[in-house]
Image: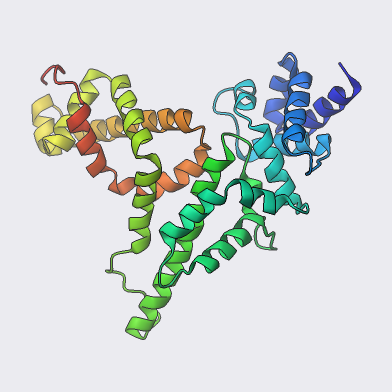
Amino acid sequence: MSTQAAHLLHTFQQHLPDDLRAQALELDGLDARLLALVEAGQQRWPELPLEPEHFCAELAQRLHANPPRKTLESWLGFVQPADFHLALACAQGQQGAIEAFERLFHGDIHRLIARYAGPNTQPDDLLQSLREKLFVHTPERPARITDYAGQGYLQNWLRVAGARTFIDLLRAATRRTDKEDVGGDEPLLDAASPAEDLELDFLKREYRGHFKAAFADAIQRLDGSDRVLLRQALVSRLTVEQLGALYGVHASTASRRVSKARETLLGHTREALLARLKLQRDEFDSILDLIRSRLDLSMTRLLSNTLDAQDPPA
């Protein structure tokens, strides 16, 4: 073990959550892996130098908020070192780091701005708000870029973080407009929310093809009985009372079975989509949770098109 690798390993272990230190001690070649991650970041961004120990300390710190779904080894396998290096340089406020970030993701940033720009959200305002949210530390909150844990591509993380930023701005602008329209302090609660439409539009545009493929994979992972149950509930629109009579159980039991099958399907879909996109779970969930209650329509269409016609009848 080289002296530098030993220092990196020590730093990484020091900053790990307590429950992961034992795993780190058992990982063969962890010192070499950490050194390789550091060097990959340095090679991609030589104009943005970072202390190797800082890279490893920050990587370990991210595990506090982004624990591995399986093992520490698998978590390390998803680290994108060049992206993480750039994010750390931006968080440090290094000269040229934000310019490098915006140069690298120029197309993504301006596509997002074009999508969300409107009478109450001018392009220049959107760009400035995104910069402030991503890169400015305040007493109330750290810069959003510090949320990036190196898990998956920074480009995907930016798309979700940018969409959330712009949706929040649109909500605020809509509330201000509603107050002005009614001359009071309460928004028009019954009005349709443009922000909700944009949330759905964001998912549809960014993930439509991936979602359909992930959903098809998830359908195949379901038990045949769950597939039939969901088809009966969502496609045939049987009520829980009808399902209860069909299966000889109480309506509340039928309701719980439908809910469990639906959550299982969504869970499988989420896992398949995360694997396809290498997207951070918390970032994707933060978007998905906003529109969870409106997923049934999409699920119904996809179930109708995807369920195997040979599923046995109930």
